[in-house]
Length: 313
Image (tube, one colour):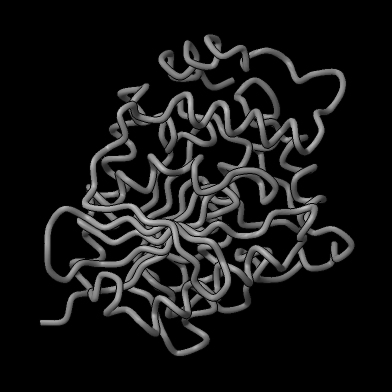
């Protein structure tokens, strides 16, 4: 079995989330409260400074807009938060978005999409796509530069789907960042990481399967095709250059790597990483672990490099 980064292991022990799964599954509300508690507890204090942070609504969807310190044109990143499609919000990923804005000098638009089970598939995807379209159509009101998508976990699933939709709509993106993405919701394929990392690393395989079932709801067949399962798209050519980062100790590791390999096979420029000792959800732990900080620094730098390469002469 892989060995967890010791700083992350100590952090999970500190918050009492390193033991075996509970005998009785928590309710959706308990899951949301627990996710929010851990996310806010590990967030930088004080928050990373940016020029401004403003809550707004785009296409009827709540968003939070982060603007960088540097004036002038900047790239814009539409960010989709993780949480298994059922937990997470604008607050749980505030630190992630602040760092994106700072490190990339970018305007970041974080999407507060609807969650399952109240709003099963395709509600989250539709919300994120509606926001992305509005940002693209009014780009001068945001960064004015090139447009990218980013997300982690379920949010990376949504971001990958957005990149495919943008290509199909003739509005290709400059880049995409997919952190430990969930790319295959079909339940028909075998991934060794689902067995190797089934328990002991915060996110369990049983939780992954539960979340997918809640998200798809009555439309389980949607998992057999995109946008729910970006990996199952028939054509991946012409998609935005991708940065894909996964943790060694993550049950979703291998489907993220499979998507990175499929993109590369289709001729898409890809930067692919498996970070030793890191677990699912590591973006939120960048101030608590040197290994995580190094990983996040690399991922954001590579996203920034793709954005620079896409700039018109």
